[in-house]
Structures are given as structure tokens and as C-alpha cells.
Length: 322
Length: 278
Image (tube, rainbow over all chains, first blue to last red; front, side, top):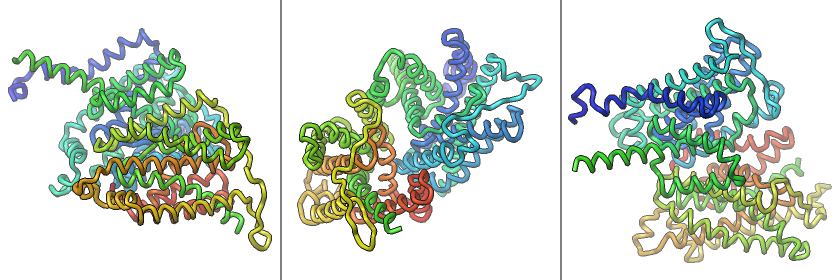
């Protein structure tokens, strides 16, 4: 309790400085990886954040989160083609689309838990993949995908890689900040209680359905945001943005980082991207390696990297106290 | 139209054979066994490897392939599934998915990634009535599915293993408190379910081509079968498999690419009216 009262203890500084620390972290890896890869990493971290709000905080594992990423990606592309090439408006449109898909699918999806929740998401993702790849291929370009063009704004020229990098980093920090506020609010506490024991939360008189629905919408919106940012970065939308078989990537990233922590999501996102970008070129049987790594994480290393660090620090503190 | 219905019943028969194992693991352990899709794939590949050994005798090849799946599914059960009893559902899903990743890569390593076509082992058509003819092979599948349904019904009603599993589906703890090692019987059921999945793969192989990712889509569809039929409900799985098989065939007749998607639409509708409590 003593840490709560005093203004600036060690812990509090750590908590207050998290946004500068994340920003500094990405600026440090920027020269190491090059601008394209770092931008990629940051966008993936946004996606992991969106996924983890559902998985880590509410305890619902979705196996079809690519659907929401793809929704964002295709909305921004189609918007830039048919409506307006203003990038900010297009991003706004994909945020709205992400929220809308959460609003529509939410009532069906959030009523289920566990395995059903995972697979219903996967089933819907499969439907979305089909729609993009076959049914609406006239508009989406089918397997070939389609390009997105954005007009230059006076203050934001997305043709410049560094502007994209700065904008994406700003978006990550903004998402992080908003989700941090969200998870530490009473609403966020309730979400975590639903993860622990939904029956008790219901017993306390809360309508858990609404809370789950709203969290689901937030998660889909953030995921769609990540999708929109990737299009801003690549300039090209392909069905791989909505491919159900890629769903495991974000799950793995959330697990590596340690679910239930926003820091963990970002660490997990970076670690996963590093593995998939670099290890894949050294290890020939890449899928098999990923499989064994997942088994190790599930059976031996359940708290993830961030949980491991926290546990290590906690042990050290205990040892010092003794 | 009758032709379409007959084709739908074939798909339903195969779906039933595959889904029953999934339904049992889902009903007993409350986990989605992604590895089921992999076992289905490996069944088809083992058939391909077994055929040259038995001089292209399809029946012997099928028996060999299904028998070879027993040790594989036992290894999966012993080293992955058994460790997941009582663990959070999410980890169970992820761990079985990891098995699929390893398995698919192994398949690609051994057999290569390109699809392998197989021909219809019987090749003769049978005329049912008034000019509706159907490949003999497909009729056999429907008959086989009904036979397996009958055999499983007897198994779960008459044998002691079946009775224990049926009781555990209702209340696992109560059965445990009678001093019965439930997990042991679950592993038997798991192996039976896996063998049936492999049989499904074997039966489906001549109808489509064999490729490493064939299990994923089938797993999703049989998941829909299990949801529509009710978890661990043996009779419900039977009915929903045939209904969804018909849905696939009839949709496929009018708009081919939407056949699989339609199954999920049906599942979504069922879930709206009948939420599943897991």
C-alpha cells in the first residue's frame, strides 16, 4: 500500500514513462531493422493489442481475428478507390467498418465462450475470406488484390516512409494509451472479472452481455485500425489480410508476450515479428518450429516473456526484502 | 435434383464419420481438437503410401491406413491431449493447433506440398431408379456411414466402455467418484474417433485431391456439424451431418463456391436460436 500514497515512487515512474519507453524502444530498433520492417512491427503490435483486449483481458480466444483486420484493410482500400483518397477519412471509414462488424456479429459471437467462441470467429472469418476471394472478387480483385492510392495532405505526406513511420508509431501510442485508460477503468475491471468468473459478475447484477459486446466492438475496431494502417504502409490489399489460416500469428504473439498485459502485447508483437522475419530464413521447416514453440509456451512458459520478466523482478524484490 | 440429394447424402455420410470423433472429444473434454483435422489428412496420405504395397487394392489400403493411425493418435493423446485435461480451454485449442502445424509440415516434408489426385476405386455406376445413376463408391459411403452409426449406437448402449463414456458425457465427476479411471476410457474413445477421422480422409480422398491443408476446411465443417447436432450428442451428430451434407450439395448445385460458406450460415442461424453452453 505504501507505494500508492507517495507521488513518484519507482513503480509509478515506470508506469508513467511507459509511452516514452515504447516510443524509445521502437526508435532504437529503427536503425537495426530498417524503416520498412519497423513500421511493419509497429502495425502488428496494434493488431496484437486489439486481439489481446479480447483474449488477455476478457478471456475469449478468437481464432478468426484476421476477419477484423481484413475488414479494415479492404474498407480503406475500397474507400480510397470509390469515395475519397483522403487517407485520414479512409482510416476513419475503416474504423467505422470495424466497429460495425463488431456491432453486427457481436450478439451472435459473444454469447459463446471457450472453444465455441474460437471457432465461430474462425467460421465467420472463413465466410469473409470467401466473400473477398470469390463472391465480391469483381470489387476486391479476388486473388490478385487491389492497390490503394492516397492523396497527399499538406501536413501528412504518406509517400514519405518516415512520415508513415511517425504516423504509425503515433497510432500505436494512441491505441496503447486509450486501451490503458480503458483497462484501468471500472469497465476494464469488470471485463477482467468476467474472465475470472462470469456467473459471479452476473450475480452482482451486471448485464455481462453488454460489457462483452462493447469489448468485442473495441477489439474489432482496433484490429480494423491495424488493417487500415497496413494498407497505408503497403498500398496494396490482398486476401492474405483476411486469410483464416494466419489467425495463429496473432495468438502466438499474444501468448509469447504474455496475455493480459498491454506491455506484453507489444513485446509479443515485436518478438513474433522478429522470429517470423528472421528465423524463417534460417530454419527451413518453419511451421514445424512454430508448432513446437507453441507447445513449449503452452506447457512450460505460460506467462510469456513479459510475465517472465515481471516474475523475475518480483522474485528479486522479495529476495532484497529478505 | 435427386442426383444432388444423393450426392449430398454422400457428403453427409463422410461428414458424420469425421464429426463423431470430434463430437466425442468436444463433449467429454470440452476442447476443440484441431489435431482431428490433421488425423483426417494423414489418413488420406497413408492410403496413398499403402496402395502400392497392397497392389492398389483399395480395401486393404484403407484398412492399413486406418490401422496406422492408431499409434499416431495414441502419441497425440498421450503427449498432448492428456496433459490438457483440466487446463484452460484456450491452451488446449492452441496446443492442438500446434500439433496441426507440426503435422502439416511433416506431411509436406514426406509427401510434398502439391495435391495428389486419386481415382475412384470402383468406377462403376449403379442405377437406383428411373434413370438416376450414382457411382457405386458413393452408395457404399452412405451405407458405411449408416453401418457405423448403428455400430456406435450399440457400442455406447451395450458395451461397458461405451456406457462409461456416455455417463461421463453427462457428469464426469460423478463417474470419477465411482472409482472409474475416466481418462483411460477417454483415450480409447479418442483413438476410435481418430480412426474414424482417418477413415473419413481415406473415403474422401478419391472424391477430391489429397493435399496437406485438406483437413482444415473439413475440420471447420465438422465443427459446424457438431454445433448444429449438439455437443457429444451421437444421434444429433448423425442427423446434422446429413442435413448439412444436403445443404452443401444443394448450394453447390446453384452456386458452387458458396457450398462451404452456406454451412457456416446455417450454423450461425442455429446459434442465434440455440446458444451453446460450453
